[in-house]
Image (cartoon, rainbow, N blue to C red):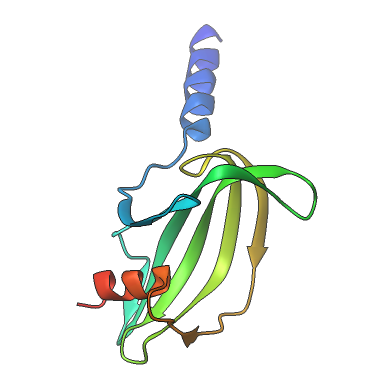
Length: 129
């Protein structure tokens, strides 16, 4: 029984640990640090799907009046068309996608043209080689 409790306790600690990614910096501004995970979720022809991460310098407030400091976005980049879009956003209470999940949104993927000088343009340059 004691061993079973130890295994259960160890499993609980393992499950509560945040998944760590090897985030690479894209852009830093006074408002936020923008990063991406080079471990691609998928690649089909000219489309690349990957996770991006934004760490906000000041806590943001959700529509439900909950504060969050970071958000991960499942992003699709179409290298040939010069477009990008998001289909999932997850907000976290702490930096680096840590702490509690504050909210999650799934949306249909809509690709939009990347604006010059935007973080999406920086992402396009980095992953579309």
